Length: 323
Image (cartoon, rainbow, N blue to C red):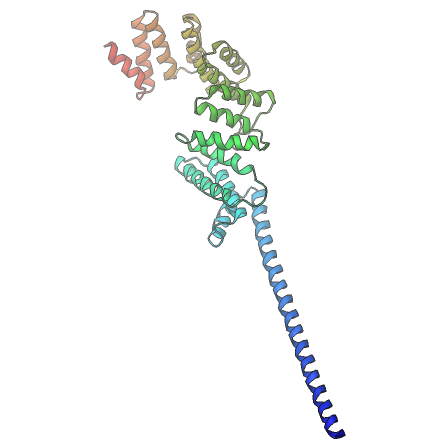
């Protein structure tokens, strides 16, 4: 019996040892799996972080072409990645405003809008108001038929308290494009009162253009006194011939409405003194002379307008109607 007890005892101990070893092996395997998974996860996370750092570095260095291409390549495998979509849209917009060819500009603008609208569908965390800001500018650049969307997204950026020096200016332009001249004036005035020069897509949006834009909105509101005041300020500050010509043409239009023929003529003659090859100034002079009952001088000015610009349809129509 003693022998049997020992045999059973040895057998129990062997079973216990096997169970212990088996349990230890399972624990070790579990730890290996956990550690391996953690290493893989950390490596994957580091890879993602490195990819983002690489793209951000390209963006910060102003290498928009490289950032655009790299983000587009990575979007193939991650089509709904918020970071990639956002940076791709921003890069596309920066490339758009740097183009000379209209077709290339529109292509990049469309790419920017597509990417940023998609990014809005998969926003991570708090709303990034840079997205509606760029979307609003992109829709404004897209042109006719998209002005209401430009207003919508620029207002969203403003309401989100996004700070950008050119935001009030673009809002003013967008409002004017949908004929909301009262809000246009308010937005332009905000930019002017803030004392900012603004930035118009890498170039400049100086105060003379801002003053001219405010004046145009006041003309549309038929508030000619305010318009005239801003135009005079524009002429005092501007050193750009195109801007001063536009301001004088608008001043001439105001004087014509006020039946101030001498004032209007003075503006048109000043333009021609500075730029004798300005077809629009000749045409408006012709219109003025026709209004005051001098058809001979009117026809002469319309002919000069056509000689300078054969495609000037209003001048050609006026000559055809007179003859």
